[in-house]
Length: 509
Image 1 (tube, rainbow, N blue to C red):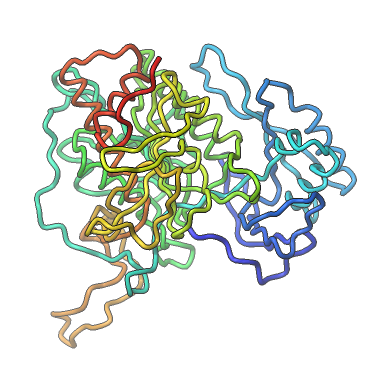
Image 2 (image 1 turned 90 degrees about the vertical axis):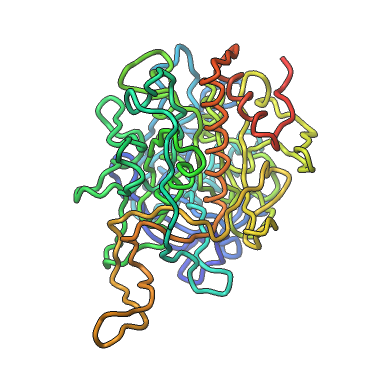
């Protein structure tokens, strides 16, 4: 992910220059804008930073005390009406399998000529006045997949590669996709990203990737995990070229499989070849994943309990004066953690310490030899919640990669520069080798032919699944030993401690 430079196009009155469009969970296409702090109108006395957002949607978050958001929605309706805009409200989804749950917030969809969510947000925030109230209305941020496309002296660090060793082999035979022949539940690692493409590692002889998984007849994520042409991860743009993000989810899946071959990989596809998705839709997809998990815990035979979620994406918020942005997305992650799911997030690739979310929701730590020290425990980190674990990337020699974000919110360092992993074997773009002999018998490497199935790539996105695989291995080891924990949260904390360089012990009860 890259920090957004100031806009150079026509910013309009708001400073939000048109960028591109994104399709949401309901198939609606939204314009995406970049916020330029230099040009943006800011009515309240505050500093803003670059961010990317959906032009026609705002998110109103429920107050910490559970107070309704009706007054804020009414204020938005009034402000929109003055501009001749129409407003529609959608509630945040709540997992049906939960016995009790509070609403996290609502999305306010705005329609009409010249709509700009930033303009509307700033006007309403000025009118509301109280900072605590104003903070409950926010942009629908666009999250960007973390990867590194340049660096190390080459223009584009993803490149085809050869894997010469044997494929990872499972230790335990299958009873079904979720269970070993001995009746042990396999650890399930959900990858919230671009999908997982075709590869010989994933579908034979054992089904490593749980494909075609539905919840109430619909995909868990924003998109189906299969394109109309049958491919499980989109590779081509409208121009027929392979996107710089294409293969991102497949590459991550290959890292998890190398570290923990016995894990089940569950694709939750929230983005296409651009690697972009919206805060609202990621939250919606995670809520559906939570529902899938809770039904699996309850014994529903078409669902499964989820052990680890990998989030290789994030966004920089526009607020610069707050070190703790809260929102609908954070609330859903908190619910997953309360249900015993470990959340592993990549730190971002800008060589920055600026907080990026959801990575910066991890508790502050001081990494030292032998494990990090946690100076302060936030209210949602304790025996009732699993932790958010943020991972940054190291070089092959163990040093911190030059692109790797770092800060007190980064929990762990794992290899992530020049990683070798899987790519969809269906990918073969229009680029050709720079050198090819006249007889066609020899050529240089074709830069976008991945039919060999492997690539070298760099990014914190590829460090996070290393930790996710280690956690999955620890979960499986405990289950094979028959270890018992008082709850799924306690079992997850046991896995965190077992990894060895994270927390020395679980929070005390």
